Length: 243
Image 1 (cartoon, rainbow, N blue to C red):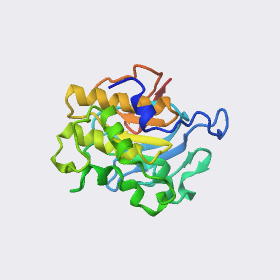
Image 2 (cartoon, rainbow, N blue to C red):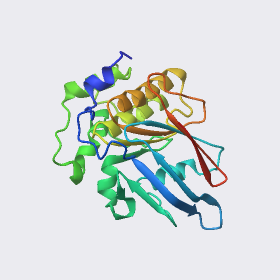
Image 3 (cartoon, rainbow, N blue to C red):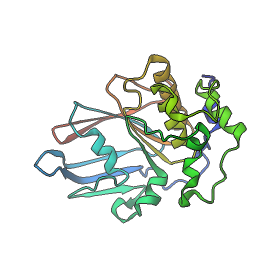
């Protein structure tokens, strides 16, 4: 992938946008607890922050609750005790649909509908909340595909006919095209070949360099090559943070 291709063809830089405060975190967990029905505790009165515009890696053993942690950040799950703040506002007071427009969650296994590549990439603009946004032209869509080494894919091709790595790249492009402030990525490179893995990793780094906050679950020891990262480890209901 050509350096800067994602930023030039897809991402709108947030570097010049007004800041919520020089030291305001993107997410702030204050004494937050979460326990699944049946008694398994994911968080036990934990307090920590995630930086605005930063790259955060989430690590921990299988079953520790890493996916649940991400799902708490856009209200796919609701916390029990404590309070979660998003850019200084109480998460529980934010309307879920509007919140998820800003805080996008991409699960490990891509969900691709039986539609053309064009329709899949433009799907976010079919939702009312994005009705005021201008959708990309075919030329722009081709540039996006080329930036992630999918320039041999036609816009009229079926999305479900793509390989696993191509579907994951397409899912990430579909998420980025609507311009979220935050990307929550649940092991996006799991089960991908090395080429697809590098593409996805480069996409996430490019998004962060353009000002998007990235929170990514990883098991494979990945560390961004072009920018610093905060690492948090989740185990036994507790979070440790390494900056």
